[in-house]
Image (cartoon, rainbow, N blue to C red):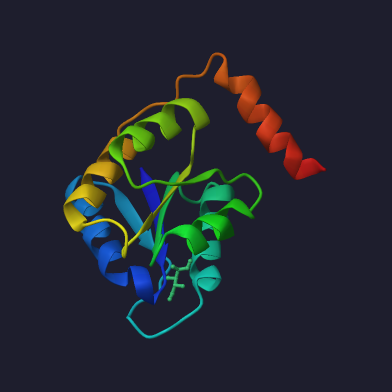
Length: 146
Ligand code: RB5
């Protein structure tokens, strides 16, 4: 499975931690930057990861900034993306099971590395439940056509 990752300067360190975790588990990780802690604009990098997921070049995406908010808003502007900003394990599982999210966002200034890795794993290893959630997701995605 191919995972797109991206961050800004505020998420650079946590992105590296999460990348290492995914590579250790055998995922192919494509890093869309940024590649250092110099101040930059999160939409420039989060949008690249989101477009890679939307185009199916990558299967899923993980994005990080200081709060996770900027990167999650950015990704959700890209057609086909459902990006969840998550800072607890329960929501990580629930958003895969109920929302079939294809991207995960976290904030480096919000969660510690240990919890972030648990959240990542809960999200990566949880499946979409389908059923009653199909129509809800369709209703969400139909808004992209308005
Ligand atoms: C950068 O200072 C910070 O604004 C950014 O990382 C993010 O938290 C924005 O939502």
